[in-house]
Image (cartoon, rainbow, N blue to C red):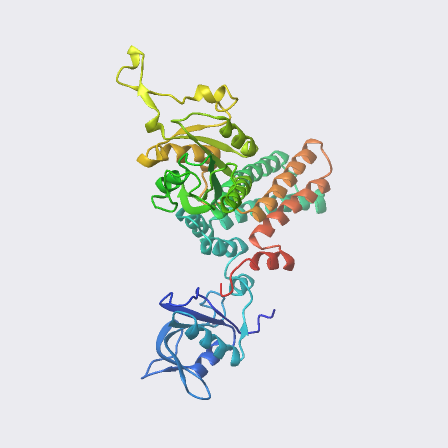
Length: 476
C-alpha cells in the first residue's frame, strides 16, 4: 500500500432496486484530475473545495453519459483523509455506481483495500486509533446505545482519558530518569508523589477496564435460545416478545420445524432470539432435523429460556430437556399461567390467586432457587414480557455493567492493552515497596506507557494496523 496512490471505492451499500443514492469516493493526489476527466458540470459552476456541483458523468472517450449525479469536492487538508477527496453521488442500485467506479479505475485510481480510507485518516493524523475503531463500531452498531458509545469514542472521549493517563506516566518516568542521570544536581525524588501518581493511573485504568464486558455486549449482542417441549408456547412467547408474527402458532405439536430468529434490543443490548422446534422423539424426518437443530442452537446460545407449560406442570420430558441445557445459563419460563390459576383456599388470600405450578415444585427437582431464575408469563395475553427482560438483564449483570458509569466502552484489543497497563503499574508498586533501584521502576513504567500508546496508535506495529483495518468494509 502506498499513500501516494489515489484510491477509489463504492462507499455505500448497493443492491438491486434498493437505495436512492450510491456514492463513489476517491482520495489521493489524482482525485481532482480524475473527477475533471469524468464529470461535466453545466453552466458556470465553480470547481472549488467544499462545493457541490451538478452535472453528468461521461465516458472520457465515447462521451456517453453514464449517470446524472452530484460531485462533492474536498481539498486537502480539509477532508476525512487529509488528502484531496472527491465523491460522486450517483443514482442508487448496482449499475450506475459500478460504472462510475470502473471509469475511475480506468483513469488511474486503485481499488481501495478494506478500511483504507480510515487507515489514511489515521496515518495522516486526522484521527487516532480509538477513533478509527469507533468508526467501524458505528457502522456495525446494532442498537442506539451501541451507536452512542461509538460516537463518544469517535469524538475522542476514550482517547482523551488515555492520553491523560499516558501523560501522567510520562511525567513520573521523566522525574525518575532525571534522578538516575543527574542525581547530584537535583533534589531527592518524592517517592510518595510517585506512589500516588502510579496508584491514580492504575485505578483509572481499572475503571476503563470495567467497561470491556459492556463493550462486548454492545458490539456482539446476546444469543438467546427458546427451548422446550412441543406446544408449550415457545412461538407465542417469541411473537409476544418481538410484537410480531415471526413464528406460526397453532395447537398442533411440532408446528415449528426449524429455528426461527428475531432481532431485539433489551436494555440497549442487541439480542438474537432463536425460537427452536419442540424437542421430542419423532419419526417425522423433517421434524427430526428441526429437533437436532434446536439442540445445536441451545448449545451455541449465550442464554437459554426453557419454557414450561404451567397448566400441565413439570413432567419427565421437561427433565430430559433440562439435562441437555443445564450447562448453559438458563431462565425457566413458566408459560400459560393464565390457564393455571385457581382460587386460593386461604381466607387470607381471598380474592387473590395462586399458581398451581409453583417454584417449590421446581426446587424439589433441584431447580429454581438462587441459581436459576423463574419467570411467569402468559404469552398469548402479552403478560410477563417485562419480567422476562428484567431477568435477562440481571443474568448478564446489566446493573454491574451500568455501574461502570463511563460514556464509552472498550473493545477486546483495548482490554488486552489495559490489562498490561494495570499489571505493569502493579509491578512498579512492588518495586517501590521492595526498595529496588530506580532502574527497575522505569522498566515496567515504560511498558505501561507503551501499552497505552498501542491503544491510541502512538505506538503501534504494521501487523496490528492490518488486523484492525482488515475488519472494515471497503470504502470506509
